[in-house]
Image (cartoon, rainbow, N blue to C red; front, side, top):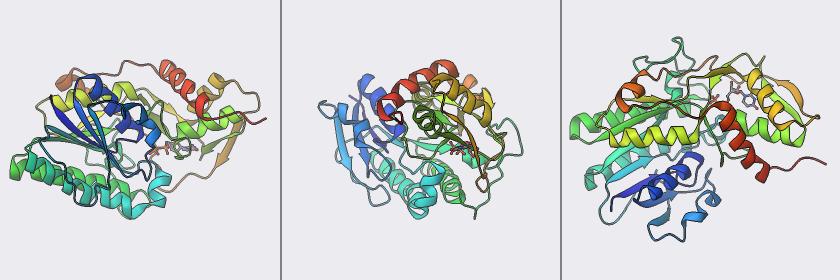
Length: 315
Ligand code: UDP
């Protein structure tokens, strides 16, 4: 039986990865320090013989006994308000944490996949973003702590690959959504769903003309699974190329929820908010035979079912 270590296991994407690897017959070690993760996301796995949970901060030395085949490094604060609140932890988990996990991978002769991000492209001047684009990042802006940690993470993964011959995989994840997103994480989808359900104002930042492209979590997990098992070590974008403005997105969510009290309100645009974002997924198609399957309509419906269980309407 293959053994996989997943860091950030109690987070949104990490917990879906745990489910997938369990269902594929792997022994899964989930690691988290719960600063943004939620143990409820993986509670259903605790009774299973082939799931173990380690409560640990991967920015500190990581020890796992026995053999290890794969490591997936998904631990990090991942929403703009989280990394504003925890800038140092964000930098540490992407840099020191990645270094520790690369060391562990080398020791165990394990293959390691690191979670990078479309944020490495910053506020992109090339559209859509393909993997050859080097990006437009402000290193000292509020998002710099996340963006630069992830860029460092890619650099050190490549260095371990080139210098030590380590098997590394780099996924650049674009905006992803689905059940288990944290209601209060400040990201656009949890914010809009919770405001629409409660019948409050949906907080559109700026004029809402900035664009994003939203990928349903099951599609993302499929792409990550294929990339891990591939023999490709350069970065691969995984995301859904269907692009919309944030204003359109607000209307789609209001229409789906159908609460007549919900309405749009305007808040200032955050500093360095990227104006547009859409993945070029040519590489993922060619190398992994992957493309997203879940339409936004279907994905939002499944996500709404989840948010109904965690957010109550105002009465
Ligand atoms: N956004 C918004 N209202 C919110 C939260 C976010 O209009 O309550 C906007 C934000 O300015 C950005 C987009 O939605 O342009 C996506 O933001 P998110 O924080 O989800 O992730 P990002 O893609 O910026 O990392």
